[in-house]
Amino acid sequence: MKFEDFVESCFAKECGLSCEHVLALRLYTTMVFRDINDPLRDTARKDRKEPHQLALIVYWLSDAIKLMRTVAANSENANRPQEKNLNSQPTRR
Image (tube, rainbow, N blue to C red; front, side, top):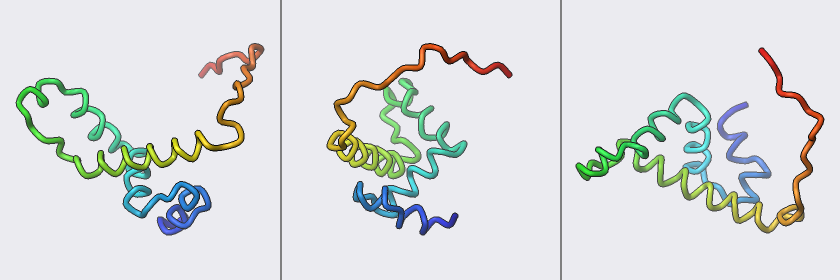
C-alpha cells in the first residue's frame, strides 16, 4: 500500500484524519514509537523543561487519537460489552 491509500481510506475519512494525522499514526507503528514514548516518560527532561524532540509528531498523534475515539464512541458497538473467550489459551512460542 502507498501512503495515499491510508490517507484516502474510509476509516481515515470517517474520522476526519489529515495526512499529518495519518503520518503520525503510521510512524507510531514503527520503531519510532520508542522515540515518541521514551521522552514522554522522562521526568528529568520535564524537570529541565526541555521540549520533546518530536513535539509536532506527538501533537498530531494525540489529535488523531482524539478524532478516532470520537468516532468509536459514536459507533453502534460503543456501549456493548465485549465478549471474552474464556476458553482461549495463550499462544506459546
